[in-house]
Length: 251
Image (cartoon, one colour):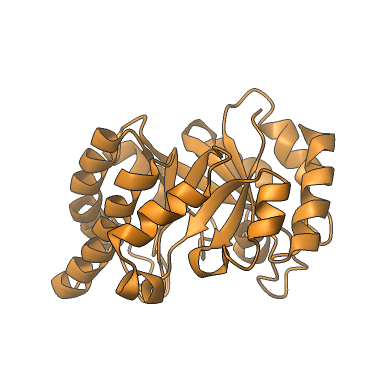
């Protein structure tokens, strides 16, 4: 298992640059919509030059208000525009994986997974084609899913080794209505990345590994024969340090 990645928003890289370089961190860089509104190609080239210790990179795409499975074609078009911009950035940074949120909320879609899936199958194929050309993979992250049927169906329909799932431990801990074993049984073949953070089932707190109630031992036992990337999503430098130390026990 390679050294884990650490999630950091693009606009915060400067604030943590000393910590990042001192620890030679592999990074998952989050580009929110506000950053995308002002970012230039030169900014990204400059960022790549600053990361001169040769880390491996992944990218986290924007997600607020976006809907890859949208019914409304104009909403879907804006989503594709944002995601295409992320792939423009990926062309420079050359990440191993780009993580996108699924956008599925069962109440918003009246529990009609087929409606969400129809829109999703318009959005993803052209984006995946370009990702493959860039030498990167796409990973779809669980958010509000209380069970992963929608994700499994999307994986089956796209049917590409370059299109997989990013399993998020914190989101599972908040929203899952089935056991971890059942969840992983359904999606294990498609997992290419893990987002690792903890909570106490009350809020998406992004605590360090072991600071909440998620069963990390069971997760890593279930995935012991699986290859995947790990990204720590603790929202503080202290939480990152604790998570990296505790992660070594499992890996």
